[in-house]
Image 1 (cartoon, rainbow, N blue to C red):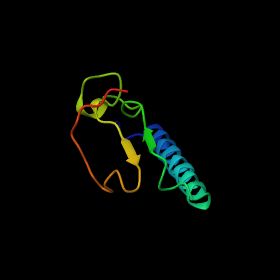
Image 2: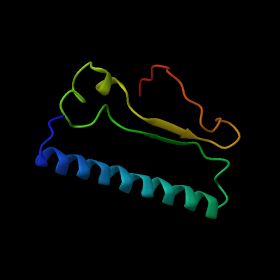
Image 3: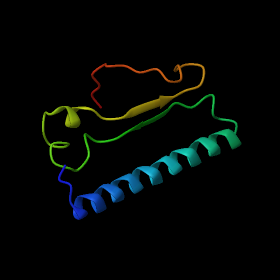
Length: 89
């Protein structure tokens, strides 16, 4: 990425979005715990491909091909498990 004030500002905004999303996922987990459903509901979260910066989206470069997906289903999905499987949603 270009090391410019604009890039720094845009990257900071991107990280703020991730922080906000993390808090929303935390709120969801808290609600599931409060309603005693944390063990019987599969929670999936994924994102679109790559971030909005050059070489990170709309290409076949590594930064575009890697995206996050997490699955939480207590007792059925092992915590911390990682995979290199190809996923199509």
